[in-house]
Amino acid sequence: MATQHPTRRNILKIGGGVTLVAVGGLLWRAEDRGVFTRGEGRAYAAWHMWNAPEYRGTPLALVAAGVLASNPHNTQPWFFRITDTSIAVEADHARNLGTMDPYLREMHIGLGCAVENMMLAASVNGFTATPDLRTGPLTSDASPAGRVLAATLRLDKAEPPAAPSALHDAIPRRHTDRGAYDRAHGLPDGFLDTLRALAADMPETRLRFIADGEERKRIDTAIVDATAAIVADEEMVHDSNLWFRNGPDEIDKHKSGVTLDTAGLPPLILAAAKMLPPVSAETSHETWLDATRDVHVPTAAAIGVISVPDRHDRRAALEAGRLWQRLHLEAARAGVAMQPLNQPVEMADRDSQLGRAPDWEMRLAEFAEDGFEPTFCFRMGTPTRQAPASPRRPVDEVSGEA
Ligand SMILES: Cc1cc2nc3c(=O)[nH]c(=O)nc-3n(C[C@H](O)[C@H](O)[C@H](O)COP(=O)(O)O)c2cc1C
Image (cartoon, rainbow, N blue to C red; front, top):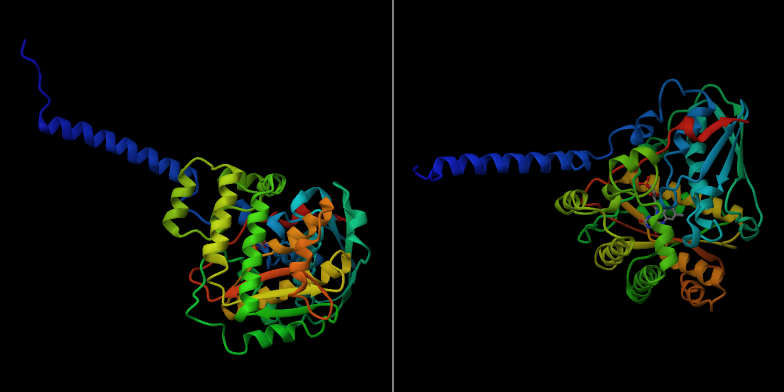
């Protein structure tokens, strides 16, 4: 019997089939891993619902604005207890960052951010809101679980509703931008003065900008060194990694945490990172250190520092959060990119938690003003891409009647 030799046409046919299956498989995996989507689905619905007609004129409209606030590692550490005349903002201690935030200081900054969004939404929805921020040392209250009152907004009816402010309208457009900024373009004229003016009614905060010179070199180095110190600290890497969400299923399930989409990666690298199996906590944090050193710090037009009289006072942390939210909303309004880079303060808290020499405290002191303590550092600059939304838990998951 004559041996059958594969013809060129047959080889092409088989090869074509294999290629089709491979491409099909790749496409399936790409679809499954969310390569073609960004910011879609249930985990992102809150960004479209925040101004929904069914909430309008009710306290739920304030909560819907609150849940879109900036917050550490997207832990969304809040619960809102609602009556007709008040909203209690509770710190959900179970949603903590462990050794990354041992005194729940950043948690309370995030709660302050939510309070600020709620204040901006109040008048638009026919309320005068009066905030009562709780004071007291954070150190004595860092229990690992449970909900603890952080602030109460008293609501009085104020008809007719006020016209929305520019900051209010920026609420759904504010996103943390972890990409490269365009260093060739400076900040818009007068932008830093506008930011300073936003801090004017907050006498318990200080705001400092560091754009160049020796001081800029020192704060840049401090941010990179602090990131390296975190990456070298196994417990911090572990606790930080607990809030990393890998792929659409985890994002859908938790509607919180940090995602690859928001990591600021260039598009092709992002697609590849989504397709590949998840990397270890160590590798992802090494990548974060590289990005901090090579992208975040060198492409920033300026670094900002918010200081308060006592970093571990609950009220001071809430006030710092209110200010940060305001600044970031103004940046969104003005088309300026921003990203918190709070690693030096995280290291100062870690030193204190472990009873080590206050090396980071001393490095930070240089960037303080009037003897205040830095509690929040961030970068700003001209964006090179549109920063994406991060997941959010919707109003009904984070609120209830008092
Ligand atoms: C207190 C605090 C600390 C933060 N620290 C960092 C940080 O060091 N690096 C970073 O990339 N983002 C940081 N963020 C930004 C959050 O990760 C971000 O707000 C959150 O993931 C939600 O995303 P969004 O701001 O885009 O809505 C911080 C935010 C807050 C309020």
